[in-house]
Image (cartoon, rainbow, N blue to C red; front, side, top):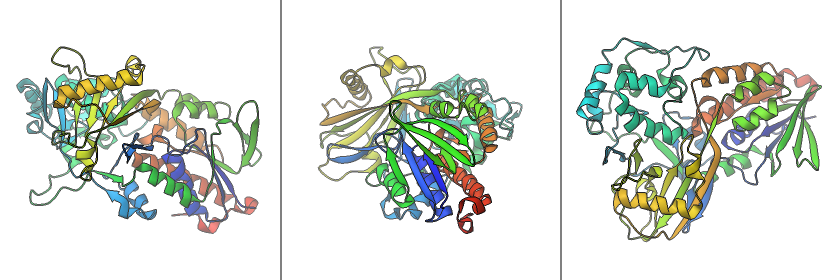
Length: 482
């Protein structure tokens, strides 16, 4: 009898786990993906705006971590891989829109010269003094207490840097607040450093590239949208896909797991030799409450934030600034004193290019942790506010050809000061349960490559477990391994 694995969650982590399980276990494994919504992809969602495929969730992945690039190649999608045609981002700070410094790591500069166009003279002086402060020791131990990004960066570099660069960048990644996010959790590359943060950032970034050589692209995307990636993962995994079926219960039974899926009125029960839980923290907490209470309690410490994306197509003759987009610093306001609604704009057509005669595409990101009232506006009100922001920032004031508002309720986990300890507790508790693994953006990073990495780790754990039981359940142990 073939080994059976159920993956709970059809987002990028769940689909990557199913694909990797197929690679490791071969054709004899029975793999099922159960997704509570009617669509695969999770935060990767592609729709059509004015005749063009547009991502209304994650639009790209970073290339510093090569995991996503390798997966794209493995799936045979390399011909569809695209990179930005323009990478000149800007930031609105102190009422001015200036170029985003290039040699920074999530807003932390490699030196004061990097930020002299963004900060005041006093702010630049504060940055210059950081490397002369006593060394900051960021322990590698994931269970050691973390420190607040806003507090530490504010003390060492000055609050201007936090408000004008760090907060806008972290707000884009986590929809979070710098004062509530953990430094080691959000910037793990700096962990273990006992030196100035300026020197640490320089080491992380490495030497600047020669001026006569083109810069390597920082981001990659898929022509046709991220749905192309998730569809290929689902297809090539050979998994049975079951949509619109929430998993209501997860129980350990003799030599396996029993899942209750579907509606409470008419539940269905399925069993499996192993399970991968690849869902957001609130759902994982509920699923693991009975069988792995320690992991459930740790998941409860991972809060989530909501956000929205306003995607707009403008007439083809509209001229956007020569930039890939603009971030907004904390506290920025219109000339009349009205606060901006958007936290960032992406000028999609500038960033990725467009064919002649096509509408001009852009999108605005809205919402940070604790800003529920902003997201409670109806779509028309939200679009009107975004258009006002765009007019203030660029002078562009035209009605969109088409617009779509996409709301992500609880879509982004918050990597707070307890995060690394919580994840260590989750993985320790789950690791003790036979045939159970976890994956997803709540663990080791919210980006696509980081989510895939957790999926691969989960698949490795499950395939190793099944190999150890190959005599009992017929797992294809000869195919287990890297």
